[in-house]
Image 1 (cartoon, one colour):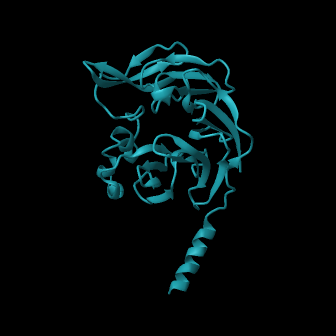
Image 2 (cartoon, rainbow, N blue to C red; image 1 turned 180 degrees about the vertical axis):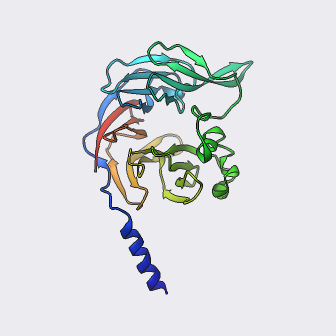
Image 3 (cartoon, helix red, strand yellow; image 1 turned 60 degrees about the vertical axis):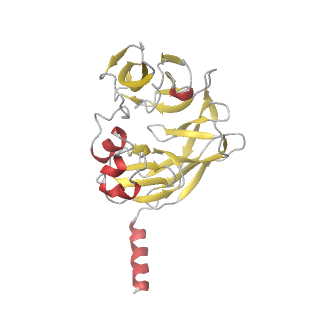
Length: 281
């Protein structure tokens, strides 16, 4: 009986199209650097620009994809946390932190990239929701609307009840979600709540356009500071992994894959700058 099972499993795996592993195709090149430090890059939908933020997600900065014309959109506290470009690349939605009698309140805003002017998208409140939550649907909406409650409210995630879902990333075709559970690693689930599976140790998953491959990082620390980081890729259909970047003196974090899937931008925590490198299969 076991022999038949293994044979069937082999046939099933053979039906999954083989995909070459995504690897680094160039040395990392410095893209953006500033006295305030740069982190958490996000490509515009057309890949023509890149947005980034500074320490503690303070402010939003944008530049051309080649690193030229770096400019400030806003210096608002917290604005860079999970900021999201509009579909036309003309504005960025952000959640800013505001102080009211010593208490932190938050407000969703839409910033015009060209002028820095903003439109408030709601009243000040204590929300934990991330930018874009109002337009999201299904399980993904729960993950970015109430990260601390998502596992409890989604049946398929019941085993993680009491844990906060962090860094959820919706695949470009909307069919899958990669996410992290603190202390439990990186996971994958279909957008309809089926097919939950572990992707192993990893953080900050970033999808390629094929909606199959993820670039992510494996980070080590000593309890007070980062000591090592490796950027990896994983084929979510087969579980096969490959090294994208493992280089002495670099601590890659928060990878962001370009819309065409040919480049990855990332924060180098070793010098608080943004780097970019080419990808290949």
